[in-house]
Image (tube, rainbow, N blue to C red; front, top):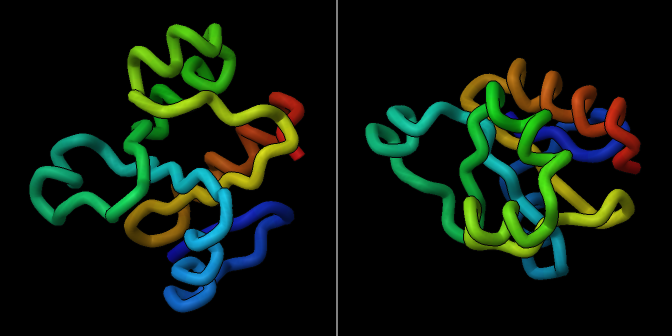
Length: 100
């Protein structure tokens, strides 16, 4: 299950279409889940427990750690997890940090 800004869930097809644009896809599952179930292409893995810290990092540090340009507070970001619960939490964390 996938979450986008404002909380609506996205279908798989909607996400595929979005990913053709300049959207950052953050997978908030744990690393062992990625190892077991596979990585979603063109996504970056930031486990939910690291997300608040990651979104407040220095941009250089973020790039070093996650091999991806840090999103600005207005960049389009999509969060995903396994069932939708963690991606909703991720969304509220990001919103509380000022991401639109």
